[in-house]
Every structure is written in C-alpha cells, then in structure tokens.
Length: 186
Image (cartoon, rainbow, N blue to C red; front, side, top):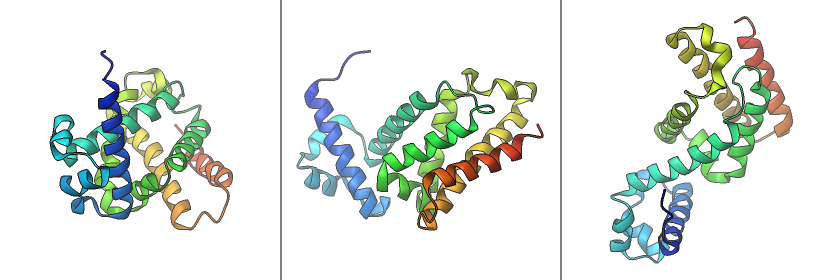
C-alpha cells in the first residue's frame, strides 16, 4: 500500500470536510462540484484529479467511516458484546456530529446510510464476530444481523428525534436490553 502525497491528502481532506459541511446544510442533490470547489477554494480540475463525481467523493467518505467504525468493532462478538457494540455505535455517531445525525435521522439519507451499513457488514462477515450465529444458515443469520443493526439504529434515531431527553448511557442501556431480550431465545 503506497502512501498518498501529503498535498493529495490535504486536498482530499479539505474537499471531504467542505462536502460534509455542505451536506449538513443542503440536500445531497443540491451540492455541485462547482459550489464545492468554490467553498473549498480548490480548482475544479484539481477536484477531478481525485474524484470522478460528487458520488465518488461520497463513496470515499463512506469508506473512511466504514473503516474507522470497523476498526472499533472488529473484535466484538455480535451476540455476547451487544452492550459494547451499542455503546460504540452511539459514541461513533455522536463523535461524528451533525453529519451522522443527518445521515441517521433524515429519510432522504436512507440510501446513504444503507450503503454504509452494507460496507460494515462486508468487512465483518468473514471475521469471528458472528460465531454464536454459525449454527444458523446464512439466510437466518442475515435476518438476525439485520435485526441487531436495525434495532440499534432505530433506537439511536428515536433518541435523537426525541431531543436526547434521556442520557446517552440510558439510551444505550435500554437499546441493549431490548436487543438482548430479542435474541436471547436463539
């Protein structure tokens, strides 16, 4: 794996950060390469040296998030460590601020969120994270994993939409309890 030139890294970082800020304030469809480059103070040709399109930039950001989250959860077991996984999801989402809040709660970003979820699933599917569920065929395992994932995200969304009326710790504890009770009969 070759290291990117520092100038390339800086340019990509500026484009990504500017794009995330724009995404918080605009709908995805309204973001143009022209506007992004103006706000980033980067030439359009420079943008196209690194990305083919806004979609390509979004994919790169999604991959960054996926890899970062995967590194956090890669050693957790999806049955025995539900509490830790739930904590990590809430914490990761909160750490990434408004951009993650928008991705998680805005229905227009469902497609983007689902892409990120699929990427994380691809990373962890070959690890030992699901060994408890190995007794199930792949179809049942997929349903179980979807239940865990969707329940976690749904509880996080509710907590956000309700204005964080309870502490994050309480929300995590409740989410964990609900998921554990949902899968304990397995």
